[in-house]
Image (cartoon, rainbow, N blue to C red):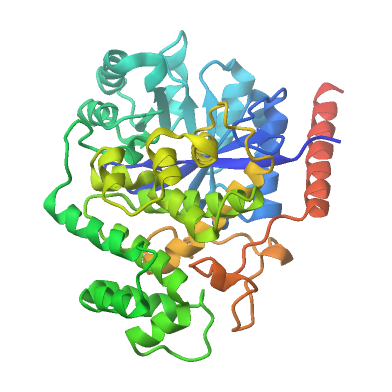
Amino acid sequence: MAPPAFIARQPIFNHKLNVVGYELLFRGRGYAADALIDDAARATATVVLNTLTELDMDRIVAGKTAWINASREFVLHDLIQAVPPSVVGLEIPETEDFDNEMVEALRELKQAGYKLALDDFRYRDGSDEVLDLFDVVKLSMPELGRAHMRELAARLRAGGRQFPGKVLADKLGTRPDHEVCIAAGYDLFQGYFFCRPAVVGTRGISANRLALLQVVAALNDPAIQLSEIEQLVARDVALSFRLLRYVNSAFFGLRGDVRSIGQALALLGLENVRRWATLSTLATIDNKPTELTLTALIRARFCELAGANRGMGGSAELFTLGLFSVIDGMMDAPMHDVVASLPLAEDMREALVSRRGPMGQLLSCVTELETGEDGPASGFVSDAGDLYLEALMWANSAAESLFGGQAAAPARTRTAPATRRRPRHLAEPTSSTPPPGATDVGFVAAGVPRPRAGIFRRAWARCLALFGRRVSEAHS
């Protein structure tokens, strides 16, 4: 039997650092960094089928365009027809053989409304002849370097055959990389540069962010009382509004409205209030993309789930560990300076600053899942891929409540065909009572379960049967 497949995703930003799409990555054997794919067409087919039949596309990409890698075999054997063109985009490597058969198949896909991207672009022989097929070209910063990235962007925008589509800078790891690509005229950006502080070498934290950090420190003081948190929340109108909106949201599932800060705090309980208020305070920081908060949520939930399975600490401590793993990017200051201002245990400090100890390995594991890197921490958690996907879907739901539906919410105008229905195990709850254990996680996310193995195996079998049948027909 083939091993189960898992989905990792990477955000794609525009100039305003708004997420306009996600690249979905196939990974095998239970964690996203394991990218040993021996059949590219089968890997892509697995991504598509799992996302549609098992996991629900909206819960993975929150209504944004889902970009998937597509091989020559995948394109030629019509496997994409199962996915509506309004939902998915196809990334085709520039190293593929663009013969007449391939070009004709791509033209048909484009005419049908599918978005196409030319991946790993380097201006190889024959590139000019196929550029008109694509809506996006992707250039990799690690492979090309800054100088070559500038040169190729200028070449695409100049001359009589100027590329009319969008140019995407991929694998940007630092803010300077991002700034170089903005100056070079790139339209789209991919990579984890947004998690890095903008001012890396400067000591200290700006005054307005120091005030926010003091609130965060107060919230995470183990001795703080609900009455003290109520004073902190009540003095900030925006924070008070967020609290009442969250508690009154469908995700909390109350039968009646909550009408006061004190009532809301009492219903949530001290631990949940601390988490919610910490995250809401960090989310008010100016000039930071929503995706940074979403990344913090995913990491927090992953650390909570994975760490608890390994007996590494309490739920609240593990959640805070993941949440604070991006606090240097939020505060635009070195991690050791930020951590020094917070009342954290020594093992958590070492994990955040140096990635040491079991908690440090936990953080390394989730960051490797995000980037798709095959690092030493990849196998630290045996079911990491499963837990990461659960954390991702939970975070999308939590962010929808946190930001009032303005970010991370599925696009309601992009609906699936009438014949497609949400799998029963992902159906929205009908009871007004919160799901079991919901009050233990800070944000009530409508009960995101893990996929059922039986359904997964049947979906995988259908995928392989479809792929095998089409290949047989093509060679008969």
